[in-house]
Amino acid sequence: MNVDGKTVLITGSTDGVGRYVARRLAASGAKVLIHGRDAARAKQLADEVKREGHAEPVFYQADLSSLDGARRLAQSVLAENDRLDIFISNAGIGSQTQGTERRTSADGHELRFAVNYLAGFLLAHLLLPLLKASAPSRIVNVASLGQHPLDFDDVMLARSYSGGRAYAQSKLAQIMFTIDLAHELKGSGVTVNALHPATYMNTTMVREGGITPISTVEQGGEAILHLAVGDDVAGNSGLFFNGMQEAQANSQAYDEAARKRLRALSLEITGLSAVG
Ligand SMILES: NC(=O)c1ccc[n+]([C@@H]2O[C@H](COP(=O)([O-])OP(=O)(O)OC[C@H]3O[C@@H](n4cnc5c(N)ncnc54)[C@H](OP(=O)(O)O)[C@@H]3O)[C@@H](O)[C@H]2O)c1
Image 1 (spheres, rainbow, N blue to C red):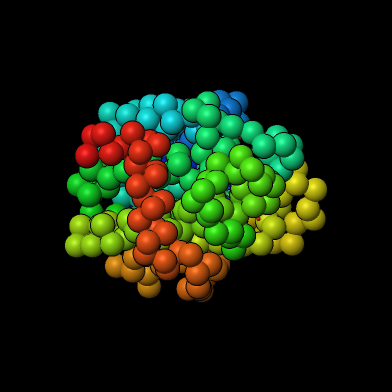
Image 2 (cartoon, rainbow, N blue to C red; image 1 turned 90 degrees about the vertical axis):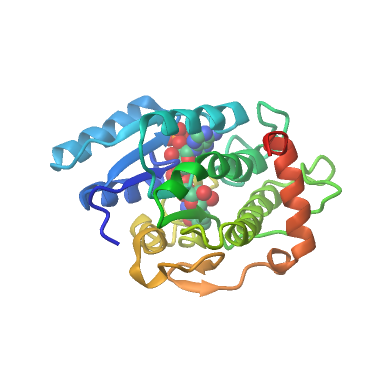
């Protein structure tokens, strides 16, 4: 896909693999909407892109550990842009971000589930009218190979918390949502796919987990770009990729009843069911 003149939103692009993807898309001529919590890190990226002679990215500041933060981000993007061709839902926290204790979001939900899954679920739905109006358009959900089935009796892991499980269930939830949304969007011109970008890239999330990186940010970034702009995946939807290759996700992703349950729960939590 030629991204010249296209508008792309990448959440979590002030750091890590999102930052790499933002730079590459800006260099290809896209109007890049970057997002994160830290204005100084965003300015550094914007200055870098400008110095390289490309259009300066537009920064959106929002904390996705609150549903209100996600709502405000969507409202600003919708108010200030007349098109949105690609939405890359990439912001996330690792299994040990902020420690090994169970933490909750501003709304009282388990933190990894809230930041890694619920915020992206809500954002995608709120941005859909603009994505549809800009079709053909794409949504890319940056998930992981780390996947754990959801226990619908304890989705917030109040009883059996571990950071690894919390991270992995949030990542599987993203993939289940991807498959579900692809069905919903059939015929709309909007496609949605999910991926594991690369294993243990050299990013903040991996380093703060005490893990020795084994992949580069470039490797994962190129896999994200493949789903975002690759011609060979145009029209494909509802798929999970491991890097550049289509792959199977955890079996719960293909369990229609589980996806239906997750969808109902997510619509209720995010308040989307109330607005239809
Ligand atoms: N690293 C890996 O090996 C790996 C493997 C598989 C999947 N992934 C996935 O790839 C994605 C990017 O990860 P990364 O490794 O690039 O991580 P990273 O370097 O830690 O970057 C995370 C990004 O998400 C943003 N973010 C975190 N919490 C946020 C919040 N509450 N509100 C808003 N923004 C928030 C951060 O913004 P700030 O700058 O404000 O902190 C940052 O821009 C994640 O979804 C991750 O699960 C990574």
